[in-house]
Image (cartoon, rainbow, N blue to C red; front, side):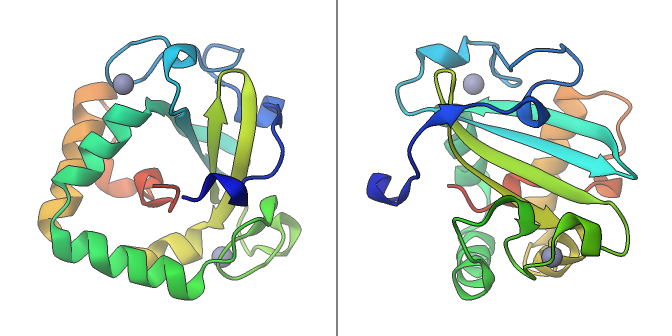
Length: 173
Ligand SMILES: [Zn+2]
Ligand SMILES: [Zn+2]
């Protein structure tokens, strides 16, 4: 991502805080390192179903690119093409970046919020509704889905990986 595309930094809004810890995310869900230490920033994802957070994580830049690197190159390319063709960036977290519907216009209140943060600042946020997440799922190979499933199983025992939209597909690579 070209840093000049980023809106000016602002404090991370509460809806992008950790619901579980009731404060901003402090550590990487995968490696446990302090997120504020990463000069490349970090990513936050929260999945909402019927208004409830069912799943959330924060990933430092090295862990995020580590997961994406494990994706097959076909999946990665297909996803990049899908998002390049369909995604409008800069809309913020109130509007689906793909179908451009506001949260109130969704048939179900089910969506993923994604954000890029640096220190205690929000650089960019976005929302993708569950229907658009399902459309993007068609571009992921079974092997790549397995990589994501392993991440879920390792970090969130008891959460059925295949029942969830995949926030790592949020195109803030
Ligand atoms: Zn990490
Ligand atoms: Zn949508």
